[in-house]
Image (cartoon, rainbow, N blue to C red; front, top):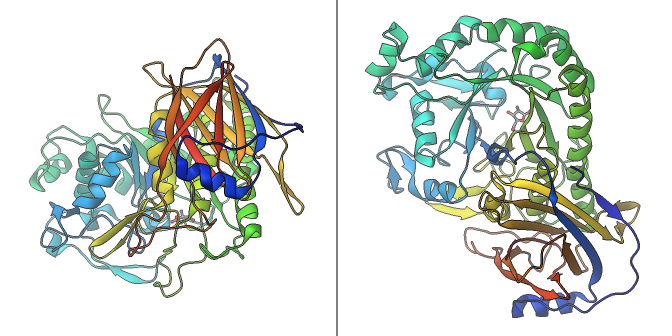
Amino acid sequence: MGITTKFKTVAGAAAAALGVFALASAAMAQGKAVPVSVSVDPAKTGPVINRDIYGQFAEHLGRGIYEGIWVGENSPIPNTKGYRNDVLEALRKIRVPVIRWPGGCFADEYNWRDGIGPRDKRPVRVNTHWGGVTENNEFGTHEFLDFTELVGAEAYVAGNMGSGSPREMAEWVEYMTSDSQSSLANERRANGREKPWKIKYFGIGNESWGCGGNMRPEYSADLHRRYQTFVKAPRENPVIKVATGANVDDYIFTKVLMERAAHTMDAISLHYYTFTHSWEEKGPATGFNKDGWVSTLKNALRMDELVTKHSAIMDQYDPEKRVGLFVDEWGTWFDQEPGSTPGFLYQQNTLRDAHVAALTLNIFHRHTDRVRMANIAQMINVLQAMILTDKEKMILTPTYHVFDMYVPFQGATPVAARVEAEPFTHGDTTLPRVDVSAARDTSGKLHIALVNLDPDKPARVTTEIAGVKPRAAKGRVLTADRIDAHNTFDKPNTIQPVAFSGRVEGGKLVFDLPAKAVAVVAVD
Ligand code: AHR
């Protein structure tokens, strides 16, 4: 399937007019709309969008787990068996399909035995990666896996290949998945869980090139082969084995892993974070200018090149595409919020993050042949979070709203969508003006996501759907007056989606898409 975005100069412009009055006035205030043509061809389809690309990552880092998810049964914060009710409800609403835990870098120092048994007897460790704070291990294997069941998500457990032994890894898997009468399975029962859990994904290490052991790819490939040998979930309760893979554009890493170990893995991971400029110059999460908007979106769009090139290497060793490429850490990484605890990676989340999320999800929709799982970093209070909490208060971020709007794409079949428009240029940077993704859900309904990257100009998006005479298109749009609009604990609804619709003109759908906006519509 070819889903392409083509740039071309299109003469003329049309006036903006929106289905929602408030948006119409906002769009008119922004000035003339730039014409954009979109052609959708429902006959050209790609492999199904695995709903697991909407996965989340929750590490023992800052307030991601403690306070974010777990407050304990005796907390005054309303909770179910220790898990915050407000967070549970919010996560269920966006149908979180899978959660990765316990790290990240934390995973490669984690001994699973620290997190089982009576909570008051669990050892206290130092979280050496993240702020040097004490980790009392109140949240361990049972707490995580029960949590996934409460949310309705699958579990992705990351094993320790950095500082742990193959025996530790093997025993953890047996403890979680065995229905036998082995001592480990009975220990699980004694700790309160009769039935084995279903562990859909198991990670053999994390970032072995860095915090997970500073390994060369050759050594990492050999260790992967060795450790995974002992990961023996029962045949009737198997796990998908994920090899720790490359950072950003380290194509050699992917090549070596595939060459030497592809036959011992089901998937290989890729990590890519979006900074405003670079690791050294991450930039502020709020209060940035147009340059910060543009360079961040440009960096986010690099995901397409990375996935394309890593996939091409994988194709050489696995032309049948058996091995998945799991982007199990992605998202924005900015300077942490002034005044927040060092090492906790707490950052605000703006309309810019919403654009990064939407553009990245659209890219994943175009690579469903390989990208069959992904985990945004991280779910709560860390990096590009869905949810921010301040003790008993909770807010939903613009990124959350994108995940909510994109729910119809989970499990849908992507269809070809082509965009023609003059590109958006700022200084030396040229970006696509509007990015589009289209897919049919399992009931056959067509959904279209439209992202306007231009912070100033609305777009008049004329959409033709081959072989279809649309009657209407309705959905929601997320936009705001400011590029760094965000929600705060005092003003939790500054930015949230509102109703949005297109109109039919000459058999085509016309959308008046505001500047700096993400919209998702269902077509009738
Ligand atoms: O998500 C934060 C950290 O980023 C993870 O612990 C690590 O895997 C990555 O470098």
